[in-house]
Length: 267
Image (cartoon, rainbow, N blue to C red; front, side, top):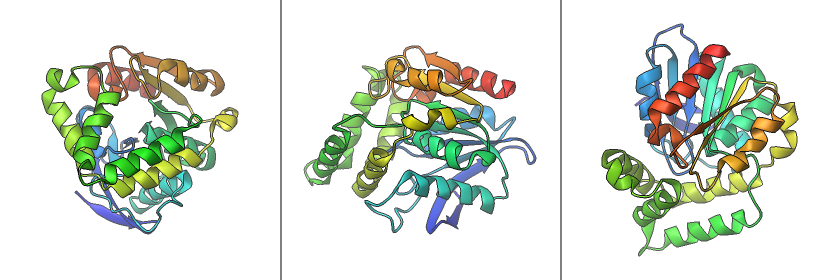
């Protein structure tokens, strides 16, 4: 996979699809990587210039020099500078979880670069106690007897519906391998960025065409939590993927892709 040095970090990415087509950027959640968009890339690269990115410390991208001072603006600038390096003036943007949090930053501070915004299984402000909980996870993941392999199992148990490992063993293995290879520092530093953000007070400022997609069974960001973005972002479209947890795009790609395509074609 190609890499480009942008904003002080060597960013790993995949860019496929017809030259001159509208750009469609996919950005993954914390602890995952660009492979979690495999079931979208195959579908949308026929009609769009599809860009999938590994965030700092994830997949094939190095952690970089920013540590606990990492913030959403840094991650957003990584993406904007990659667009610049690839001569991509504007893009549809699809972000899941952490990727969606970066989407808020882009919509508020780099709106001219977005054709549309799709927020998937995400939130703009973390609940009270989240920082302490995630710091505790990071300390546990650092222990030699635990490690990221067990961390992957623990995270996927929370994120995916029951028995997903048996209903989609190939998909489960792909996700688990991605998390298992994550440096624990990447989880630690991105947790600081996640808990430093507060976009919920600025939702009325978002003017980009927006769609909000929730997983029906999602625990971290259930439809009841994500409904605020449907209500507070002007003109936002809404979709719930039935039977899906925190990775609706990966768990139920046919339903997710239909929702996404219908939205994009209406922008």
